[in-house]
Structure formats: C-alpha cells, structure tokens
Amino acid sequence: MKLFRKIVILALLTWVPISFAELAIIVHKSNPDTMTRDHLQMIFLGKTKGFPSAGKAVPLDLPEGNAARAVFLKKIAKKTQAQFTAYWAKLMFTGKGVPPRIVESEADMVALVAKNPSIIGYVDAAAVTDDVRVVAKF
Amino acid sequence: MKNFVLLLVSLALSAGVLANDNLRISGFGSLVAGQVLDGSGYVADYPNLGIYDDELDLGQETRFGIQANATLDENLTATMQVMTRANNDYEAEVEWMFINYAITDDLELQAGKLRLPVYYYSEYMDVGIAYPWVRVPSDAYSLDVTNFTGLQLNHRTFLGSTSFTTTLYTGRQTNNSDELMSYLFDNDPGDVTGVGSANVDRTFTNILGVGFEVNRDSTIAKISFTQSDFDETIVNSFTAEADGTIEFIDVYLQQNFGPVSVMLEYNDYDPFYSSYFVSATYTLGMHTFYVMNSKFELDAKDGTGVPFEEHDTNSLGVRCNLGVRTALKFDISMINDTGATPVNQDPNNDGDATIFTTSLDFMF
Image (cartoon, rainbow over all chains, first blue to last red; front, side):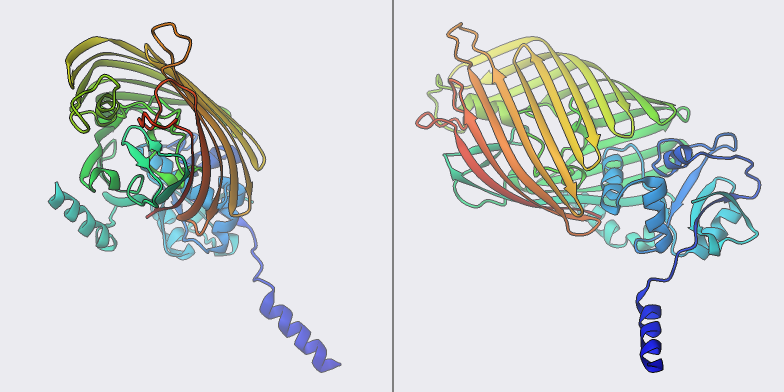
C-alpha cells in the first residue's frame, strides 16, 4: 500500500505541470506609472507607443512555449497564439507595425528592463528581481 | 530584380546574423491548389487574373512575399515587400516600397508605393494566414487597381479601449497592359482579332481618398471613399480612348460574438458596378469554419433589364491552424452566373461552376 501511494505521488509529481505563480508586468525602476489592463494590452498590441506619463514604451515578448507567455496571451493580449500571430502578420505586412522582439529567457527580460527605461516586459513573478519594478500582476 | 530577390532571400537565410535592432526580414506565402468540379471555369482572383479550369492547378493563386523593414532612426522606417505570383510566371514585383515617418505618436506619414486601401482587406489580401477564408471573396474584391504611388497620412486616437483610425491618401497609378481589363476586352463579343491581342492601358491620376475605422474589442466598422481621374486606351479590333472620373465607396462591418464572427462588406464603384459579401465564422479550438456569400453586379447600360455581368458565389470552408504560423484551408464554392456576359468569357457556357480549393498559408 505504501508503495502504491509512493507510485501515485511520483506519478502526480511527474504529470502535473509545474505550477505557474503569477504573471508580473515589469518596467524600469524609474517608471512611476500605474497602468490598466487595457493600457497594457494596447502597448503589447502596438496600439499605443507610450506609457501614460513615462515616455516611449517598447514591449518585449518571450518565446513560444514559455509558461509566462501562455498566461500573457490569455490575460493581456486576450488572443490565442494563432490569433496573436495573425494579428501581427496583418500589421507587419501592411507596414503598420512590427511585433515585439522576442528575448530568449525571463532572466534576459529582467536584465533588459533593468537597463532601459523604455522597455516593458512580462515574466513569471518568481523571476522578478529588485532591479525592476512590477507595474501589475495577473 | 532577380538579383534583388536573391539578395533578400540570402538576407532572410542569414537573418539570425542580421536580426539586429535596425533590420527585420519576414515573409509570408500561400500554396493554393484548385480545381473546377463542375462548369467550365472559375475566376478566383480578378486583379491578378487567377482562373481555374477542370484540372487541378497550383499555378493560379500560389504566391510568396518577402519583406525587409529597416529602422532608419527613431521616427523613420523603410519597408520593401517583394511578391512573386505563380500566375505571373513567378516574376518578382515590388508590392510595397515606402518610407514611414512618425510625426507624433498618433500621426504618421507614408510615402512611396502603397496598397490602395479601398477595401477592409485591401492591405493584406495576399496574406492568407491573416484571414479565415481560402481567399478574399473574388466577387467583392475585383478592383483592377490595387496599388498606388503617393502619400498616405494615418491618424489613430483612443477613447478607452475604442480606437479611431483616419487615413488620407493621394497619388497616381499607371497600369500598362492591365491584365484584368485586357482579358475582359480580349473576349469582348465584338472582338474579331482573336485571343490574346487586346491591350488596355489604364492610368489613374489625382487619386484622393479617405478612410475611417472604429475598432472596439468585438466590433469593427470601416468606411472608405476614393475618387480619381482615369483614362484608358483600348487596342483591340478597334482602338478606343476614354477618360472620366471614378468614385469608389466601401463599407465594412464586423461583429464578434465569442467564437462567432459576422462580417459584411458592400462597395459601389461608380460608374461601373457594385458588389458585396457577407460571411459568418465559427472558431472551435484550432479550427475555424466559415460560410460566405458574395455578389457582383454590373448593370446593363442599354436598358434590356438583364445586367451586363452578374454573379454570386456561396462558399463553405474550414481553416485548421497546424501551428502558430501555418494554416491549412479547404473550400468549396459555387458560383451562380446570371448576367448577359458569362464571367468565364466562354460564350458556349453559362458561368455556373463548382470549385474545390485547398491552401497552405504560412508566415515567417
């Protein structure tokens, strides 16, 4: 029976996806703005190029398959992966915008945001460091 | 031209090296195969003259595009898009080539070769991955002039989550040996010179247009109005010259109800024709199912009561997203031809046809 329990626990540990804490939207420490979800959506969809008061906003994206990205697409972009791609195809091939650049890892995202006051990114809240400011959590 | 394409392709292949902050290479394409199952021909693409017959054909709507987008400075970008179409012998053509200047965050000026934004889908009708159907409805997207060279001013403003986009454009376009018009006149009943001899040159000058779009989360509405001076020279069994003024008005509405979307577009091309389409789509996971009806009507000028050219098409299809950047589509369309001149230009048949089409759309 103990062995059975061990197997069940082992199976659960193996098969249940690693839990995702929370999505943190991060900006440079000098950025004082508070932002609504609508405004964040507009920044990440290229509909606005600015923060409410802190100047130019340049959004960054994470690679496909990243757990934080899945949450970002659902809660901020409010699009499926395919819809997000089609949305940017439409803008890109009509000269109306280019999709956010993709950075390879959440550590890179944090490092870039820490360096540049224009950059806005998102990571798993667990990856946030003291070098950046969390502007919203979802 | 070919050297330039080779250069672009090699740039794309080495994009990993060149993907810096100042240059982006991207592209898209559609591999499209169609076959008329019943009837004698089907015009799937009017502006580029893609026409299917009863043999499976990959050479009518298949197309690839590659785009280079360079940031020159903070407010200035340069964009060039080269396309190659199977039905144009894979000749590379520059579809877009323009400089974009961001005057403010809300206002930008584009100068160069652009797409004439008369229809809602004008600017990305070649980018199959960006819409649910195999093709934009051919009955309603039949304008022979698709591009222009000139200036375009785009302004966008927001009220909450609603965006308002205003576009002003002006320029000119010369279509020497206009493919569609040459084809139509080639088969004119009055033609006695045989196939392949008609030539129509068309020039549109003083193009002046305005577009206004309102976009909310689940609602899109767009209206555009375009006018232009135009003159044409037709060389056939006769030679004719004509000039005048054209006006084009287009209205587009889209409403999304969760997984269901309904689209409606109507346009009137004065003094020639009017057309429309209506479509509903239903998205379930990776699949989007659609139905569509479109209609083209060019009235008779002689008062016989029978329109010179009139046809409508019912389509049923599905788009399956294979991955994030790839979609496979299947479509069956039935065209009902009720005009005096059969749309397939075959005087021995009416233009009724049933056609099956499949496409693989992708971007990179």
